Picture 1: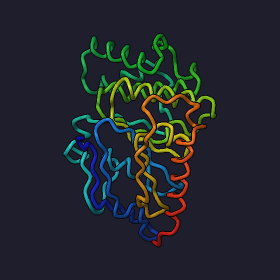
Picture 2: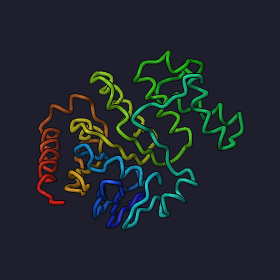
Picture 3: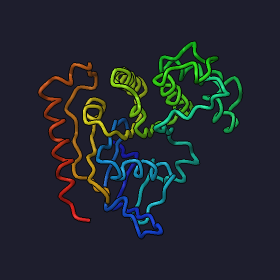
Picture 4: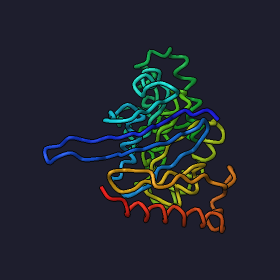
Length: 259
């Protein structure tokens, strides 16, 4: 398999008025093409920071990260990835279609192609027919799907997702988890996904990366044996519960590290 994201001895320390904050320490990881990788760990462990390093939104202070074999800055300029934030971040004065078109307008994509991309990504997230609606006319879950559609409009092979369903209720979250799995299966994209939920991480992922409290280290990388097609009731199976138990053990092990 081809490694599309590679971290080697990655460190990141923030300098603050109260002294240095060691966010990441000696992180090594390979993400291969077509992987769905979830990052899980306690709050402040560096999950989102690691994702932001991949996206060139934070700069490491040690080690290296490559995306598609180049630096995150080069990957960003090549529009190699789409990024989905915790909040949908839709402009309320623009329609759903207008929100999706905005980055395409900035990129100078011709208007006919913009229209075709908007149509295609709205179908991918099951929002066909909502192009002329405004964000305030959609539920929170639908707004998050629109945010995912906007990230997909770049047609990049990599999707970076920072806890996109964390603020949603469990029923909506389950539904979006199912839809995201179907989207991953249809598109074959490489997905890096931050979550605080053990069931979500186990249900979605082909690989689960367990991280320790700050400074963030990787305590375990779990290759999921679950089939790619996963109904929600797979969460009641012994196989699923065994993986969830291993994740919990990895989280406990992380607390044994010394700063």
